[in-house]
Amino acid sequence: MIYKVFNVALELKQTSTNPTFTVIEGDTGNQLHVTVTDGGSALDLTGCRVIAVFSKSNGISMQDSGVEDGGIEIGGAYNNEVTISLFPSSIAPGNVECELQIYSGESMEVLVTTARFNFEANRAMMNEDVLQGTNEYPLLVQLIQTVNGYVDAEAVRVLGE
Image 1 (cartoon, helix red, strand yellow):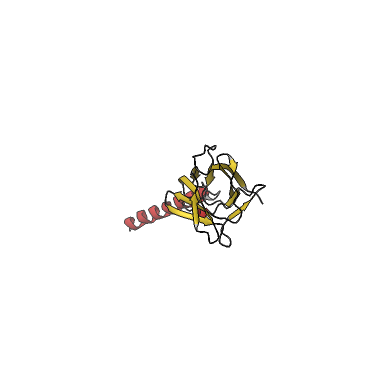
Image 2 (cartoon, one colour):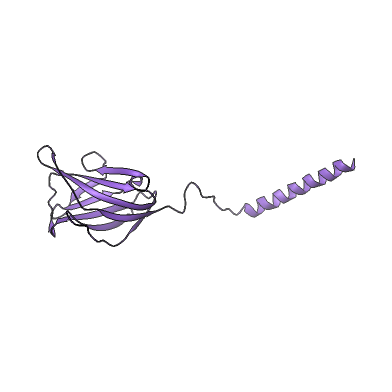
C-alpha cells in the first residue's frame, strides 16, 4: 500500500512551526505522524487516550484512539508518537486546524489539550462535478449537426407543401 506520510512536531504548550503540507480531499492514504513533546522532552503517552480534533471549513470532526477503528495509534521509542490515519471526513477543502486532546488518569479524568497545527486540504481535480472528456465527443457533435440538418430540411419540405 502507498501512503502519504506527513511529519508534525507538536509541542504541548507552545505553537509549533512545521513545514506547510497539503492533503487532497477524498484520499484515504494520508497519515499524520505527530511527535508530541513538552518543553522539548518526549511526552510519554502510555495508558493515555488521544483524540485528534479537526476544525475544517465545513465543521468539526474528530478521531479517537479509544474506539475501535478510531484511526489513531500511539507508539514510538518514547511512546510519544501519534499516528493518525486521516479519515476523508476529517478534512474539507481549505485550511484545517488540528489539536490533540490527551486524557490520562485511572478513569481518564485528566484532560490536556496540545497547541494546534494547521495544514491545507485541496479539492481533488476528479470529483462529482467533473465531466469526463471522451474520444466520442467529436462524433457526437457531428451527429447533432447531421440531425439538425435533417430537421431543417424537413421544415423546408413541410413549408413547401
